[in-house]
Length: 509
Ligand SMILES: Nc1ncnc2c1ncn2[C@@H]1O[C@H](COP(=O)(O)OP(=O)(O)O)[C@@H](O)[C@H]1O
Ligand SMILES: [Mg+2]
Image 1 (cartoon, rainbow, N blue to C red):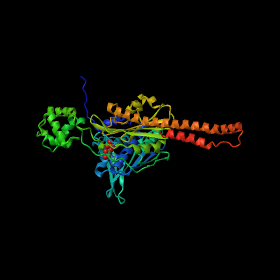
Image 2 (tube, rainbow, N blue to C red):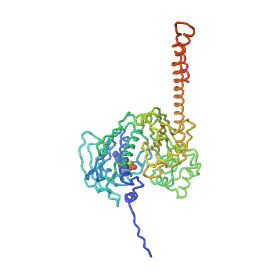
Image 3 (cartoon, protein in one colour):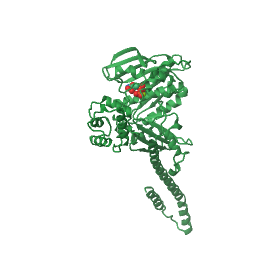
Image 4 (cartoon, rainbow, N blue to C red):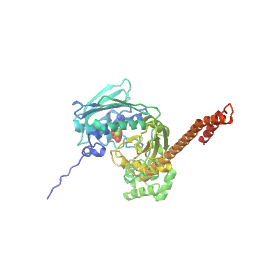
C-alpha cells in the first residue's frame, strides 16, 4: 500500500511556493511588484497621516555590480510610520496588516510589503532593514528576516534613535534579484500613472544608472479620507454574523442589529425583525446554527435596507482627476465623470471615468486604456479586465469617435472590496453592476467629447468660410470698382465683420 505523508504549511510558506499568484512571477515582474507594493504602502501611510505624500524610491545595483542581477531597493515616505512593536510583523509576517477594516485602502491582504521582503530574502539571503517613526520622540530601526516555515519575523537587530525633528515616516531597505532593464518601461509607466491618480503626491525615482525621474505634485488638495464602516446586511455571510455574535456585548437581537450593521437604524431593525419573526428580545448568543443561516438569508431578502453609504470610499473627484490627467497626459481636451455610489453584493463602489483627447496623446490606432482601482494603476493583463471589454464593445460611432483618433480612456473604480480576479491585483472581474457603471460613465464622458468635437468642427468650418470671404472679397471689390468705372473701392471691412459676427453667434449656440 502507498502511504501518504501529510504536512501543514504556513501562509508564508504557501506564498513562497506560489509567489506567482501574488505577482512575483519572474525577476522582471518581481522588481516591478516590489516597487509597486512599497509605493502603495507609502501612499496609504501618507494619506492616513493626512499629509501629501513625499515618496522617494531608489534602486541601485547590488554588490556584484550591473551584471549580477542583484539590486538594492530603498523606499522612503513621510507617512504615518508604524508603531515599534508592529514593525517586525508588518514586514516579516504574511497576512498581517492594518487594512482589513471596511474602508477604502490600496492594501487589502496584508501581503504586498512582506512578499517583497520575502522575495528579496529567498533570492539574496539578506535581511531587510526598516526604519520608522510615528512622529514620537523615538525612531526605530529593525533588521529582520522571515522564518518562512513559521510565518514569523526573526529580529536580528533593533536600534533606537532620538527623534529630535519629530520625523514621521518609514524607510524600507532590502536586496532582491531582479531584471530592471526588462521591467523599466512598466516601472516608469506605473510611476507616471500613479502620479496621475495621486496628483497631490511627490514621487522621486532614481534608477540603477543614476537617472532621476521626478513626478511633482500640482496640488496639495487631497480627497477627503474614507471613514470606516459597518458591514451592510446585504453583503454579510454566516461567518461574519457568527463572529459578530461572538464579540457583541448586546443581549438582545434588536440592539445587536442596530449596533453592528450598516444602514440599520432602530426603526429598520424593528421592521426587519418583524419580517423575520425573530422576537426582539432574543439573545443573539442563543441563536442556533440554523437560525443564523435563516437570519442571513432574511437579510438578503428584506428590501428596506438603504444601499450602503459611500463615506467609506474616497474617490478622486472630477477636479483632481482632471488635474492629474492634464499634468501627466497633457491632452487638448478632457472629459471627466464621477458616477453616483452603487453596490455589488452589498459592497459600495464608485466609478470615475475620463476621456482625454489630442494634445500629447499619441495616435496608436486603438484607444489607450488606463485602469485604476483605489488609486492604483493596473498595468498587466489588460485584456482580461472588465473596463477593457466595456471599451472594446462600446458603440463608439454613436459618439463620432473612432479608435484611430488620439484618445485615452480612463476608468477608476474605488470600493471597500475591489472585485480583483487574483491576489496580484492586476485585473477586475466582470460584475454586472460594476460593468454597468463603467459603461454609463464612459458614455457620459464620450458625450462630452462628442460635443467638444462637433463644436470644434463647427468653428473650423466657420473659419474656412471666413478665409474664403477674406480672400475673395477684396478681389471682388477691386473688380467691381473697375467694372463700374468708379474710383473708390467700397469698404469691405464692415461686410467681413458682419460675416464674422454671424459665425460667432452661431458658435455660441
Ligand atoms: N510605509 C508604511 N508606512 C506605514 N505602515 C506601513 C508601511 N508599509 C507597511 N505598513 C503596515 O504594514 C502592514 C502590512 O503591509 P502589507 O504587507 O503591504 O499589507 P497591506 O498593505 O495589504 O495591509 C500594513 O497594513 C501597514 O499597517
Ligand atoms: Mg500593502
